Length: 114
Image 1 (cartoon, rainbow, N blue to C red):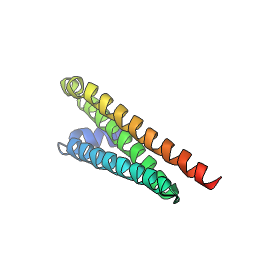
Image 2: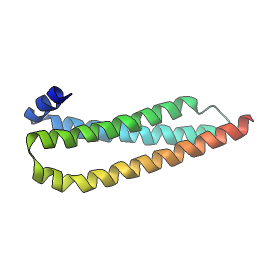
Image 3: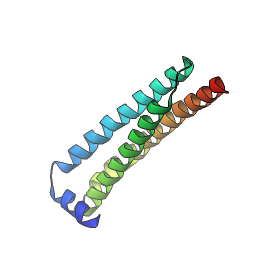
Image 4: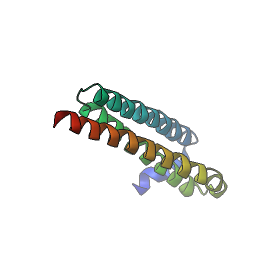
């Protein structure tokens, strides 16, 4: 893993790829979590969208951690200082939103099948 992060720190485009990947996966997580909730409200199975939404959320957060590690390996302390708080805030908001949507979908899905 350390070798991978060292290679990422040498690439000038790696940060953009990690950030765009995290953004795309975050949007996928929100969309599938919302789809799970809508399917549960309609009385349909929400299992598939729940799995995709949760997986995409986890992958988005992992990519953000890799980006912060990439900056630290590159010695970009100013960049870490600039983006660290925003990354923590956005990651936390994504996690709370996905957890709220998936929990509601799971509870509704379970109550309709009981």
